[in-house]
View 1 (cartoon, rainbow, N blue to C red):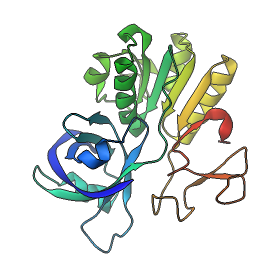
View 2 (spheres, rainbow, N blue to C red):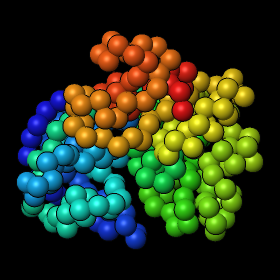
View 3 (cartoon, rainbow, N blue to C red):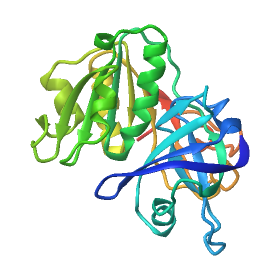
Length: 258
């Protein structure tokens, strides 16, 4: 994990409260991979705690990373006002990411859990998997975002709350309707979605790696604010808990209770 000053190269307003930012941070990018995140720090000293944001894309040759995030409070609203040339203090890469031990992957992302799936799709493609081998199910409220980027490297299925795009319902509804199977599910999204995916994986004899979304405070594993229930006793806390920020955010489904 490195603490550095990242330079904003680009910021784009994708839709409503969703923004895409590209940062120059070669020291962070060098060791980063899919499923990890970075902590962004506010320039307002009254907001001491960092904002954890998942990595959406990496370009190791250029030393850049892309984050796609939703504005939900003062910190992320501040970041949404950044322009090319501005600087942000960040730490990263943080946490354990996805393990790419799959030849027939199924990627499931819901809401702001969609962006991390894009870097994962890139890494699976770089391993030699073809577009038809990488199945991606994206769950939207209504409007879509990042869709074109996914379609370039994977086979995409869509669900939406309203049914205006794809299957009406969630990613599991789409998986059932299209009878999507594989040897590994990779997922990121809200806990009810992950709970359903864990069940879907068990029903279909599939393994699953789940990226948990939890509120974080320190973002570096010291404060124990983001623990989740685990099957085994954690060596740090000595109870059946895991720290999502550093032990995760990615866990195998059987490791955690949802």
